Length: 247
Ligand SMILES: Nc1ncnc2c1ncn2[C@@H]1O[C@H](COP(=O)(O)OP(=O)(O)OP(=O)(O)O)[C@@H](O)[C@H]1O
Image (cartoon, rainbow, N blue to C red; front, top):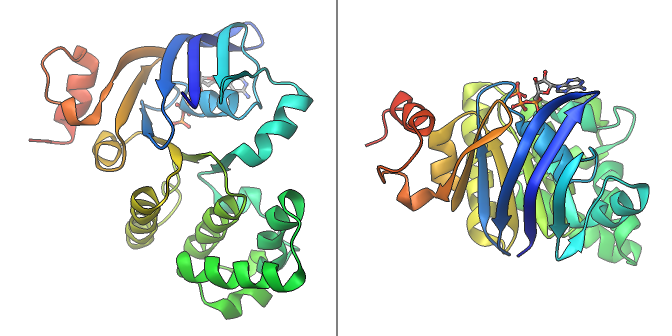
C-alpha cells in the first residue's frame, strides 16, 4: 500500500474535524475524496502531506509512519506533491515561470543546466504551455496557465503521490474543461498514485478507481468507482450520486 490510514482523527484547536478515517491506496491507484464544503477534504490532504497533525490514528506512506513533523515534511515534500485550488496561492509572483519550474529540479535532483532545460522544454509541451511563457513572471499568466504551471512543477518532482485539491474550482468553465482534460491525460499515462479532491462526485467517478465519501469529517463510504451502482451505498452517497443524474 502506498497510503494506509487507520482511524485518522484530526482537530483544529479542540474541535474534531476528521473522525476515525480508515482507507488505503495502492500504488498507481486513483483515490477520489468527495464531500460537501466543510466535510474535511482539505484537512485530510493536509494530513496526507504532513502539514496537519492527527490526534489519533495511524498514517503510513510507503509503509513509513507519518506524523506532521519537520523531518516527515522534508521526506514527504518530494514524494507527495499537491496542486491547490487557487494556483496563484502557491506561485511566487516575482519568479519567472522558468524559475518556478526549475525549483523541483534543483531541489530534488542533480542535473546539468542542459538536462534541466531539456526537462523544462518537455514538461511545457506535456502540459500544453507556450515555451515563450518561461520568461514571463508568474504573476502575469492567466489562471489556466497558472494551474498548468503548478501541475508541471508537481510532475517535475517525480512524486509517488499527486494530490489535486479541487484543481479546477477557481477556473472559468472553458478553462476547467481544458485542465480536466490535461489531468485525465496524466491519470491515464502516468503510473502515479493520485488523490483527487472534489465536491463533484461525477468527476471523481470519471477520474478515480476508488472513492472516499466524507460528511462532517466522517467516512460515509469507501468503494470502487466501478461499483457505484451497488445498493449498499450509504443514503448520503446515493443522494450525491442522484444529484448529478448518473445512470
Ligand atoms: N485553519 C482552520 N482553523 C479552524 N477550523 C478550520 C480551519 N480550516 C478548516 N477548518 C474547519 O474544519 C472543517 C473542515 O474544513 P476543510 O477545509 O477541511 O473542509 P473541505 O471539505 O475542504 O471544505 P471546502 O470544500 O469548502 O474547501 C470545517 O468545519 C472548517 O470550518
